[in-house]
Picture 1 (cartoon, rainbow, N blue to C red):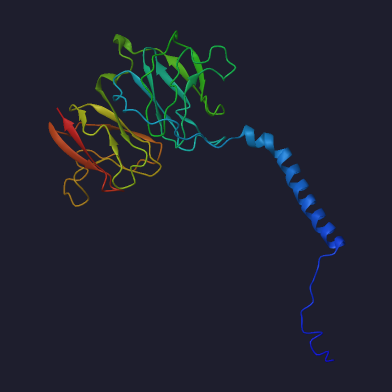
Picture 2 (picture 1 turned 135 degrees about the vertical axis):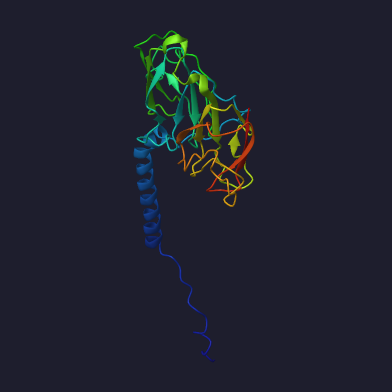
Length: 281
């Protein structure tokens, strides 16, 4: 009988009980280490949730600010603990002024009077409620304040964000600020304006009178301008007004002394597809 086929077949390898036991032991040790790490870091994970983003659809933008309004910006990146949060962080508010907060961050925020959630007087002086990214709060009346008062406030979503306001005397004659009669409102460069086709300036058109002034708030994360003219090739570009470069979360003031009644187009020098219109009366 021939034995030439006895060694043709490949040997069948089988795992020994000892090798199987070692494999199961390695798996068990790995799971135990992972469980231990999770046990020691779980409370930290819960205590430091990621920033809250948009939780409701933004409603129509509020009307521009009027005379006697102190404006405060919730800064870009404020939801990161340790970063600057409100600008100015210690605002001087003339007695009788209202407050208006603009959220230049990408997370939702509040500005609520008090030192924190455990403060029994939380929200009694003012409370913005939730302000969505790129949006403004309503104009807030300060309840029960007097000259010399200092009011602390914080964000209910990110309690490490804090600021304060100090109540100062109103100007003689009852005006809240010396130039309040010339303040025509706020032009906001909207969050996401650097994306072509997205809404960019609000309100658009902007209505002012000769000699009035406005605040231009950049609620986007990119730098922008508001420059009179139709574009860089316009020989009159920037002659009526020009904000210059406004970094994300910053505000500049513009006075319309060198304008004539009529319509004036404006655009962003950084993103020329962003355009708006100024109506001067």
